[in-house]
Length: 428
Ligand SMILES: Nc1nc2c(ncn2[C@@H]2O[C@H](COP(=O)(O)OP(=O)(O)OP(=O)(O)O)[C@@H](O)[C@H]2O)c(=O)[nH]1
Ligand SMILES: [Mg+2]
Image 1 (cartoon, protein in one colour):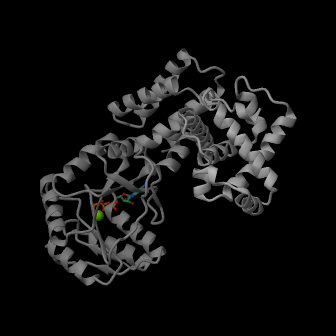
Image 2 (cartoon, protein in one colour; image 1 turned 90 degrees about the horizontal axis):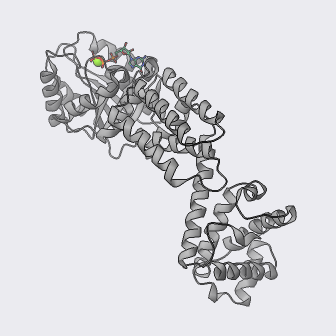
Image 3 (tube, protein in one colour; image 1 turned 90 degrees about the vertical axis):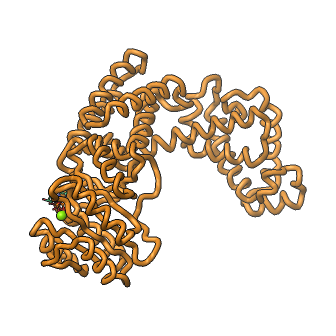
């Protein structure tokens, strides 16, 4: 994890230090990006598609207005990295029924028993009543291992020290905790061979029909995580994945990417041996950490706002321009930050300081006015009459004259819209 973020941070530093992002620079950066991803053990096909996508986007999409090419490059790498890690989406643990039965499976030493306890603690802290069940009858110390962890975190435990029948322990354990919110069932990892292990967890699955099967994978296996997941998937469904030991390897990124490719969802990552070292996996946060930049989301927001703005301009060009679209556009522009910073970057728009200041003031006022309008008024500006304008002005804390001025500006833009080309000309 540390090695990975060091490699990526170096790359980002390099990009930040480049003055021009020309083709030669792009080629060099892309080779370095590939090396970094391969070092993280990201599967080769994903490395290729990652760099190809990033390069194509940088070449084709072009930095939006006001965004420096190198910032755009960082933004693209950031967004592609998030995609590589499984994308945005809900990952928190939300039990849908009572009890929610979760079963942990995984190969020997992957961290199942430790993770069962970590998860129990995580949930207990969120006020869920949790029960822990140990079904490992093969490793002699498994019973005591989980029992002790359960006592340490104050969560009830079920196990049968002398039983040899993992399936029956699972059934009785789930029955024993039927009044709990969540039951976590730990399974064996050590077995005669892979086949008998997979058969056993398959049988336990069919006997207790858990709501969630969680595959626990050791991050040090890197890209082999996918093959491991697929092996288990032949015997039982894998709903979610927890990747452990992210703290002790540079291959964690590869494991995460390989799992994302199987479409299984990584919900948590383990970051140490301690019982508290479990974290909800958030690809966005993780990518930002790996790239070693705190302000990435601010950059992403800015790029998205500009892209949104450009999209609105396109919509304007196609002619469906009502006040709702006008409002969307004003909102997008407002998000770009101080206009004094934005305008100098737009080609062919030269404004005096007073004009910039006036635009800034107008934007504030216009947002207030637009926010005081009903959806019907935004959609069909023609319904606006004197009494509606008075009501809107009152709501926005402006004069009816301000409202009329905004409407005039809107009408002008609408008229100009045929020739408007990706420029915020109307603020002239
Ligand atoms: N550094 C680190 N070590 C971990 C993490 N999770 C588990 N471990 C360690 O990995 C080792 C194996 O953990 P267990 O929880 O016993 O693994 P298991 O899958 O239950 O093992 P079997 O029951 O034998 O299959 C222990 O020494 C744990 O302390 C983690 O996130 N980071
Ligand atoms: Mg175990």
